[in-house]
Length: 431
Image: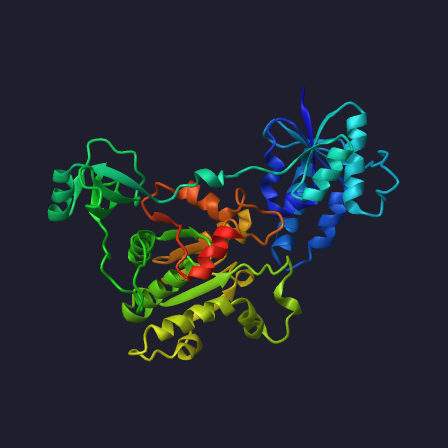
């Protein structure tokens, strides 16, 4: 028996490709969804863009038949726009709310005998659907189990002879490995566990090699734990074009990324500039209501970046770097993600902070903007998400980690220890 999936508007805004994600079943869009898309299409943000994508997709489907009767989607399934929403709801659920009209349409189809599933990113809408006896689901395509997220490193017990050879020969060849490219290893002597070394697996040569930048201080700071050693190695290795750093507050994700960017850009001149951006999601609103021009508005959202620059300044008193000049000369550029689309970004050290708030299309847009010789760094905490339609399992940061692991130009580290302060680490643990 074919299933009928009734989609809420927020599913289409979250991922315009969702229309083709339900195999050979029937996808139903209540007319209320079309009305809501029509209201969103003029928005200049991601919602407006996705609403326009869906509208164009539906318009193209009209060549295959009447949308009100159902048209083929090309994957064995069909799509239909449901005009009727005369399902009976409790008196408390009034028709003036779009969510309720969508639920009425789903209820009507179920009363007709269809096997109906209501799909929405809205938790309250799922609760109401369940109360009405309609099976409700989150849109879960591309979800990642956060508890099984690739950490980017592991421990490996080897013999005393092997670890000595590694330290002397600067390489270790293993007969059998199941490591990913650029995966870091804490090598431990089987007989003396305190005898350790840090290495990185390179798939092309099937070797474990020492970290390139193990003894380096970057922009006045030094790593405080092994995960930070690993992160610095990835950030400074130009052959690794995409880096993801995941960790809770105070683990040093953003600070390390900015310090490495300054090192590679200002000191080594490996990149033309540092471009730093963050998703602007205070409570799902855009930056338009803040006073001032774009730069003035951005200063509010970029304050954590300025805080990190100020801290790095205290670590480099001997250099007397004027960060205002770096900003004025565009050596460091701050930009809202809204303005990234359409740009090509060659030879840049591109940091996206708070990347756990990115939608599927946003992360694809960002990474696809990378031009020749650009390095992209995504940092974030999957447990601290402000986007109402994302969670620790469905955010794009963790999805990128799992999709890219094993690629030659990709590296990842999960940072576990908060180094901000004892109070900060205790708050992460207890709260």
